Amino acid sequence: MSDACCGDEQPVAAVHEPLWRELRFALVSGVFLLAGLATGWFGGPRPVELGLEVLALLAGGYTFVPSTLRRLVKGKIGVGTLMTIAAVGAVVLGEVGEAAMLAFLFSISEGLEEYSLARTRRGLRALLSLVPERATVMRGGTEAVVSPAELRLGDRMLVRPGERIATDGVVGDGRTALDVSAITGESVPVEAGPGDEVFAGSINGTGVLEVEVTATAEDNSLARIVRIVEAEQARKGAAQRLADRMARPLVPGIMAAAVLIAVLGAVFGDPAIWVERALVVLVAASPCALAISVPVAVVAAVGAASRSGVLVKGGAALEALGRVRGVALDKTGTLTANRPAVVEVVGDPGVLRWAAALEARSEHPLARAILDAASDVEPASDVEAVPGAGLTGHFDGRKVRLGRPGWLEPGEFAADVRRLQEAGATAVLVEYDGRVAGTIAVRDELRPEAAEVVARLRRDGYQVAMLTGDNHATAGALAAEAGIDEVHAELRPEDKARLVADRRSTAMVGDGVNDAPALATAEVGIAMGAMGTDVAIETADVALMGEDLRHLPRAFAHARHARRIMRQNVGVSLGLIIVLMPLALFGVLGLAAVVLVHELAEVVVIANGVRAGRSGKGAF
Image 1 (cartoon, helix red, strand yellow):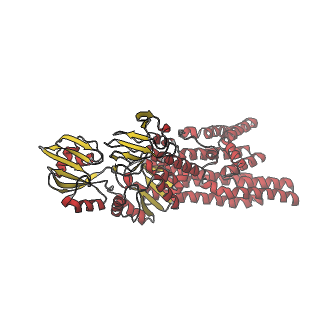
Image 2 (image 1 turned 60 degrees about the horizontal axis):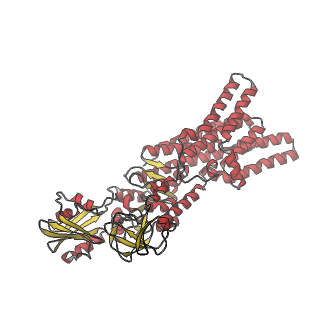
Image 3 (image 1 turned 90 degrees about the horizontal axis):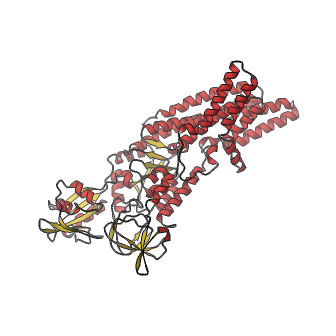
């Protein structure tokens, strides 16, 4: 992060401004600087030229001097500190034009850094939509409608079909199938009955539930997600960018050297000469190339990535993306498409037809998978839902039932049900005319390219793991197909965040609200953009805007290429400072020569930085 952007906290719902607004002070500074140069070239009055240079210096300096001073008060230094010192030194030497040039260049780098950062927290508001505005609670034997904030521990909520659960609790009465994909990431509905724990934001299925409140609105699962995300974004926001990390030890060293030169020179020689040389050393140490080189590389690399469907939110994210060596993948919506489908039908030829007849008018989450698999759907009659169990109805004058094992006895299909469940599928049984006729397996299948992507990541040296809220059987079966050996299943959002925090240099890839804490905690959070929720996209450092996972290893390769260029530029910039300082110290180079070398170096690092826009080997 830049000096200019780290001094003050950004509001949660801050809206990122367009590029021209980020660069407006740099543009003003550039106009005044160009006018001053033109005045000098054409022999205009020196006072006019000087006045224009001062205005250019003030406009450019406004982007970093105030924030640098605020950070210095807090004991924090960065590349802006060194630029401020160099500008002051140039002014003392009477080179206001040089100081204005330093301010202009650094104001450009600050604007580019701010623009490339493009991070806001407005996605946290998406979490609020998961909590209903009202909750029905049983008090004194009557129903009362209250705000979720008014719920108290021990209250009994009444949750009707299709409603969201207002806060965490335990089912006291009723059975249903809950859609918990936003909270845990499970791709298929979860059966819930008396004694089962339920979470805020879950969507009730067809049954009516009475839920005993076990957490207030301020302390439920969604509130914990918000707290984790906010804390981790604040932690990342305080991290320094690459140039600042280099400047941290450099600034005090250069300041100490300049003071030492001035003091010793004044004691053993002509004070005027050595004070001037000390100031020239400060200008020689000005990190003009360092300040502009990294932002140019970042903008070039980020622009190239965005044209290929990968949104990288700033230089820190790009650098971290090129540095990580581990990848933690969510299952639902990331490795899979989050579209459950029928994977196998066992039993009589009419099993799928009978199941589709019952599901034709059903709102059950698995209905779409069964209907998509059936070629001809003729709705059954007298269809009734049995909450938490299944459906009943009549087809061709015969009674038909569809439901979970346990409500219907699998009989001769017990072994098939067990086999399908061990393979990670959800098995439902079909009973026709009083006899169990077969079973249907539904599963959220891997993306076609998932195994290829995992293989490439491992070939590139990344450690790959799966983190999911799904059950162990489903997670293990799909991980084996994808070629992933390390699997962590049945995780809550905070569990994912804790696991990612324990894994050093790891990127987390996810797409849902339940992934937000892990995306914020990981060194790099990567969201599946097209399928992802707003909160996942806004929380993440990188967003894959398409559904093709093959962008993931390409993004890593592109970031590694850009990071190499960034490090090259930093190395050249620091090397230049190391060479120029002794030459300035011993009077080999005067101020004009030092400035000329700096300008040439800036051209070199800018040209090298532009190369970051051309993808490296194996990238886009």
